[in-house]
Length: 315
Image 1: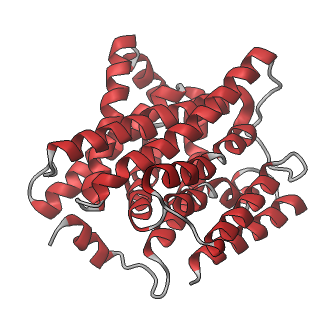
Image 2: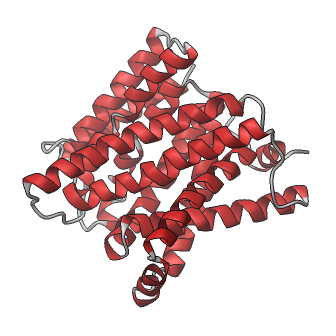
């Protein structure tokens, strides 16, 4: 039994729901929770430092999981698939996530997430151009409704609360916007780059190789800049190892595997639309973790997005 079949037997998807779309929803829910930890770590360490830790932790966990299942630590795949997935990891995990954290620091999570919501639109366009993934009217309607809900939540009138981001100058605003758009482009491109290889190998193997690509790129960058000692010291001083490890296990081990499943089983536009709903799932957590109750605008946007997801999930 291969790793995908093993995990599929242990973690069955709900009966009657499409596997790709359900996996995307699970990933979005997990990312909503773990983003609270990664946002704080990005401010205390650095965007690249936090991203390096979470990717490295996930790479170790995936290697351990592969060893326990297959009795060998490293996956077997054709060289062409290795190169495709390594490139996907560099683009989506190393560059894309680092861009996103950098956008958060400069313009705040609300504006950064608003720009990241371009992800499914870019993915839908690229999916049609590269793979001729034509979506039916129902799917397009579901994407439109879901994106409307996300935009309502993230708009100023929606009342989405930032993590205390201060006003920024024009230069910081420009860089924040560019980083946010760059994150959306990189995450959509990274997902689509991986798609050809996913037709030939299982999802857990693909996730592991993608994580190796992202981790390798970040480690090389850290070595080149001589920042590892500084990052490790900040993690120790701020007592971030345990929360970062737990967040990495959930956000980069479990959720990234679910994301890979969603890209494999669902059209790119639909998968990326559901994945982009991660910020709206912070709303139910607001009173407990962010010291505020949901506003009427946030609640409205959440309900609209849930309706759009239902259109995509229910066949």
